Length: 183
Image (cartoon, rainbow, N blue to C red):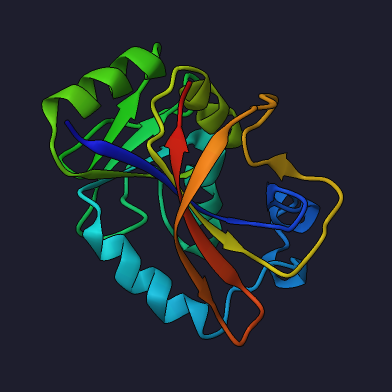
């Protein structure tokens, strides 16, 4: 069975995107896009067999020149979950409309690698409610932003976590890795 890992940057107050990112003004975002944590992140994502994301996360890449239907991360199979975005699925990028939960349950059962959920707070919340996320890898930025996209969207989870690794960077970013213990 494949393992689903929610590997995402987050503020200290549990937001995965601030208002600047939502407005398309990434240069004014408080999130750290440079620093000693970045090479580790680029190395970390090589362990994944596929990347899963919601529409807003996928469209975020359009700010950097990506086009609909193109992969945001070369060499990874992409699954984009949206009922509103329009493009033709292809060898690199599958657009999944409809029941994301059933699709991801099947994807986990059919595979045996690592699936990377890289964003989509609402998608993450839905997956968490269905006990489909196995591990959290949080790149905790040393910022408090007050509002934005919540780590789990509108879902307010009550979870027990097992810390399996912790890394601290001179940039102030910390990266805890937790296994989720569902009860």
